[in-house]
Each structure stands twice: as C-alpha cells, then as structure tokens.
Image (cartoon, rainbow, N blue to C red):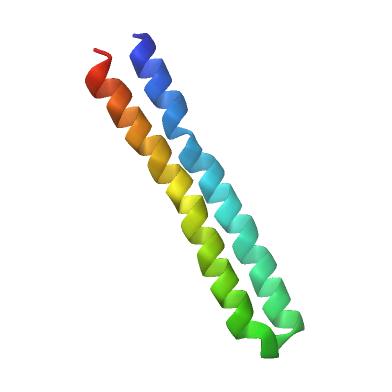
Length: 72
C-alpha cells in the first residue's frame, strides 16, 4: 500500500514540469513580442529549458515504475 502512495507522489513531478513549461512558454512569447529580432535566441533557450523540465518529469515517472515493480 505504501508503495502505491510513493509511486503516486513520484508521478506528481509531472505536474511541476507542466506548470514550469507553461510559465516558460508564457515568458518566451512575451519576450518575443517585445523583441522580435531576438526570436532565435529565445526559442533556443526555451527548447533547452523545456527539455530539462520534461527530463524531471520522466525521472519521476521512472522512479514511480521502479517503486511499483520492486516494492511489491
């Protein structure tokens, strides 16, 4: 039972990643609206930040799977 609770908590990292990516995208679109000539640099940094945020969500998912598989 505690393994299921732990797995559920580990999967919540996806929630944080989703919120972070949403905020980053919002700020990037604001920045592009203010300075359209910097779109290339802003887009590169946005993609890098989104990739890192998604990585944390994937790590949480992997931890949840490991908890379910090995702590039965």
